[in-house]
Length: 399
Image 1 (cartoon, one colour):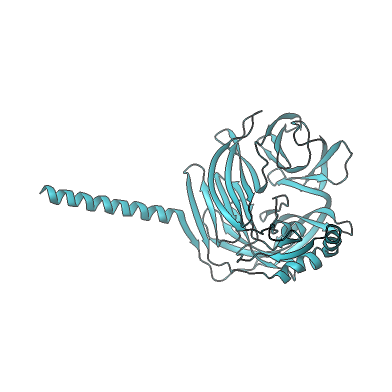
Image 2 (image 1 turned 60 degrees about the vertical axis):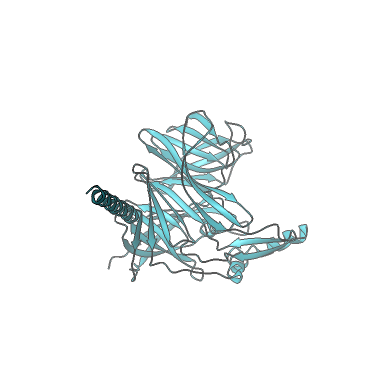
């Protein structure tokens, strides 16, 4: 009798274990299986251009932030643009200086408003915090330089954090480590939580010192916080990941409707010589240093070219790239339902393609809100290649 009871207990234990494993697998994997894409016609209403470097945007406040290209020797000038009026509503100055100095900026690269404060990242070295009237509050320093694929601040349970796609470059692969840091006033930042790692093939610069490979049309990573979850993705994988900050659960969402693309070195050459029109610059630079620059495309498959927060309960996947039309297809997905909704085409600029380079530093931002019909992107113009921020308004036509 005891033997039967023991066997029954083992059977029950194994059954429950299998059920738990099965439930966990179902909970952490999901698939968006769509065969027919619903391409919607999109009307571009107009585009307003601003000279400068794009630092960020806040659609709830109808603001975007630009480091203006005109500056004095001792300051950086930042403009806050009203997205409704398309005018600069305020400018303020940041003291120019060394990155080691807590109260000075060597190169402002990212700006975000969160809970009555502005957070400004200086290059890869520190974060400076200002109250809403732009009075300086404090600086927090990185222990090591934080070269990144992406960056996003958020608030949880009254405390402030940021998620970063920390980029580590190696001779054979680049690592994107999705990590969370907690903001503690006037203290150096410490790692709070690691979520996951993902990998991209990289160029081996040590093969020949007389040749430098320019990696274009490369696999990249994106990420952000949205409604208590961390979203991240690697364009070389046919999926994205969702990390629930409360449940501590990591879920992968398969994107079966995406088709892989593989580019050639001729495609990379087209980027340098025809689209950027910078081939002559590299050739002159090469003659000067006795180096040959060689445009090189990603050696593997790429499934998507961007991953964005595009509105209330909406995610956006740049699921296709058309270099002839200089546009990308934005596939819109329900964040909670994980259902494919529709697709639209939007223009491609210099910043979009720079994020798809092997040496990406997460500095070329794109912001899209399909609910408001706003697309903010980075481009260049003129012989001097002046940096431009383009504020494009669009309308998705109804069936």
